[in-house]
Image (cartoon, protein in one colour):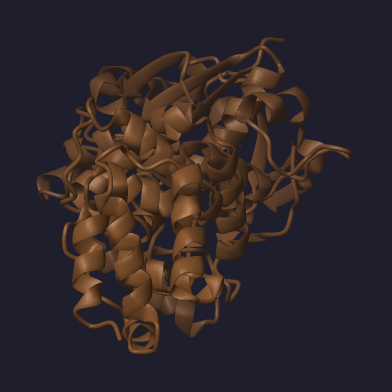
Length: 483
Ligand code: GLU
């Protein structure tokens, strides 16, 4: 059997990390089996669906490297097919028009509550006579179309993650609404659980892999497959992503959309890697840092955990730093440029390129997120820096003025760009000539050049500043507060 899986996001919000993780598992499964990964946009909720969310979802999946083989298929363009299938169930006598008013349904539920029963539709309009129907229509009632659910049925499936799952027909809430009906003969909007099944049949989906929150839909959907005379696919319900408190990760937890993670400076590789680890355990001997392609070689559902996976920022940060520390410098520069630009730093992407590469080499080992580079390199971009309290305190100690004067004098001797060897020579020279400790000279240089007492490599920072002609003015400014 050929493997055909799908991701079916609803464009009612930005690409959520939970949906993206489900997409990862589908993609890995498809690639592992040489199958197809299909994208379907479930945009039938006209009020909440927005084209900008669809765009955000497509962009997010592409950014993560989850390229799809077919689609996107939009449900709103397939209404005729859904209506045709509703009609088929009506014709087979497996679905019917029901005419309850909202008030009647409310009263029914209230009565059930009073009897301590679970609320459900009591199938009261399952066997209306044509006369009764006529009377309801004459009253101007708007019907819905309900699919018959046999209370005595037991529905079981072998879930790829959870093993055997069994539901009783009587726990499914009574005959289910599959479409709104615009009148006695027309069919209005077909509803969620129904269209998913029609699509999955039409798209020949072999495995439905989706979040555990859909598990309650599965028994109803299995009955619909049977009613439509189709083979039931395999189902796999993946564990949810939880917050630290163990509840489902939601908007209240702050960042949850892939575009937000992207903006925060996480790389696509790190996010995809981390999402895979949220629910899947790599095989023995495999590093925790892996590409989607590598994971696809080993991916199977035996290694997908049943329990929900807690989102762990420290782990994500660690994974992201691994990618940043090992990334090719030209690629890292490309990723950093937008962050520098949006911080308002002046960057000429062509003429500054060698300087940017040199600077990136200096900071790469200290990066956790791409946006760390903004604060970390500020002193290299902006002409005027502020001195930290610690830097000022240091510059107020004895000997700092002498150190700065010595360095300035050496720098003024030539306009040649500074080299690493010459920088070292200058420090040695100042130490000797002024009788200062090397530590003091270095600390003074750091304070004067970077405005702080800690930061990236001092010699490299000096070279970078020198190339932008920022070292001398900065030393001159520091001299005004040095002792
Ligand atoms: N549209 C559903 C969602 O966004 C997915 C439906 C499914 O995978 O069956 O949660």
